[in-house]
Image (cartoon, rainbow, N blue to C red; front, top):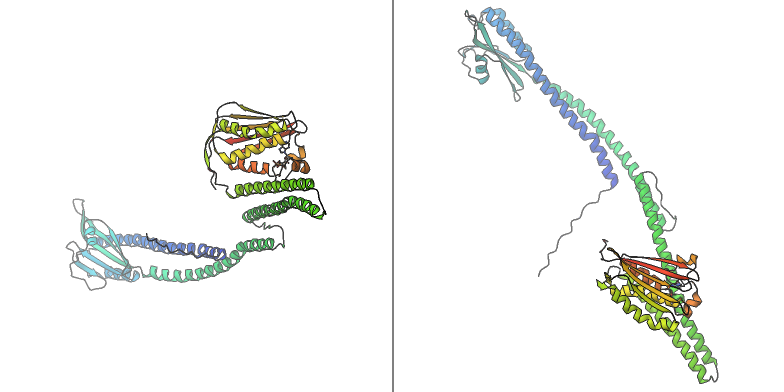
Amino acid sequence: MKSRSFKKIRFIRPSLRVVVFLLVFVIGVVPSMLITSGVLSLYASRSIRSDVTNVTNEATLLANQIVTSGYLSDTSQDSMNTRFSSIGNAYDGRVMVINADLKVVKDTYGVDEGRTIVWSNVLVGLNGSSSNYYDQDNSCITVTVPITTITEQDEREVVGVLLITKSTDYITQNGIFFKDVVLEIMLIIGVASIVLGIILAGRFTEPMHRISKSIENVQNGVTEAVMVDDYTETNEISKKFNAFADQMRSIDDSRQEFVSNVSHELKTPLTSMKVLADSLNGMEEAPIELYKEFMQDIGNEIDRETKIINDLLSLVKLDKSGAALNISPVNINDLMEMLLKRLKPIAEKQKVELVLESFRPVTAEVDEVKFSLAIMNLVENGIKYNEEGGYVHVSVNSNHQYLFIRVEDSGMGIPEDSIEHIFDRFYRVDKSHSREIGGTGLGLAITKNCILMHHGEIKVHSTLGQGTTFDVRVPLSYIEKEA
Ligand code: ADP
């Protein structure tokens, strides 16, 4: 099957400095732009509204004068014609008087007189209502009001329509003037935003640069810790980095210690073998018994070297395959019985009584091999660090959630100040004694690793000269923890 290749999308990673700068600029300029355009359109609509009101009032007044002066029957009245002209001039517009037959009887422009005009707003006027219209393209408003008389029957009669047009050019001109002023103000705001943006961007990002410089210094060993205290966030980053650096240092320390311990432990049997071999070689005629005895010792040292290497391999394997547990439901009672059966010969040799007590049948989800290794080490220690006539009691119990295993011995106990170290790699309370009985100092480290891998817990309680108790607790069901 052909595999499809996807192109990786590359994002441009912007600098924080640029982001802060743009943010300040946008926050400075955009609102002032919006406010300006809002104010301008508000000014225009308010001016038009107030113009409509004023012109309508003027037109209503004029419509009354048309009636009282009898203008519709005599359009040659100078006083009225002059008034129409002066209003037309004042408004930079036009005044039209239309009679009930829709005929224009007066037009201050003089172009439509005598013509019939059929326009919706005029018709509205003939129906007795005022109306207005804003013509944005020609930049003017037109107001129409009915010309009404009162008949002898005291009824209102529409005898014509007065139409007044007023230019709104001044609004456009004022708008242009305002726009110029606003443009100047915006220019000032824009420049101020750029300057402020540059200053703030520098101020905000400067601590980041210091953090990065400090981290570099820590990496190069110039300083031990990072501390940039300017903001809560930089303080937090500094603290977290320091904690991480400490952790790395302690991992590095313990790795170095481990390596030196390993080399030392591996060298000891080799040194012994070298001494034994050299002394045999140095003898002219060594008796065969001495050869046999030395070869026996060399064999023991080889066994010891092999055990150390095997323990180390187990430990490295556990470290490496943290997630690789082979989990399955295991009958713990049967497993314990089998393990103790395997250890019985060693216990008998040491004259130590080995007892298994099962409080209830328990099945738990564990990795049988690794779990067995952990428990074997504990029971083996109970036998090894015991004395003739002593005992090792192993008990199995559970509740609805956990499996409990207790390994209790009547041995020599562990000094209080050693308890916190016994799970460390290569730690032995009494090096020579442990060596004598074949200890490597790795058993409890292996045990602890195995138990932790099962998300369990191990605790120790010991009284010097009386005995030691190890308590192991492991969940009955293994739940994979998220990485
Ligand atoms: P070792 O291979 O030396 O037994 P371990 O890691 O198993 O290494 O144990 C570390 C040390 O803890 C031992 O050397 C011993 O001193 C002490 N220790 C462990 N288990 C017991 C015990 N049951 N009683 C007394 N001391 C113990």
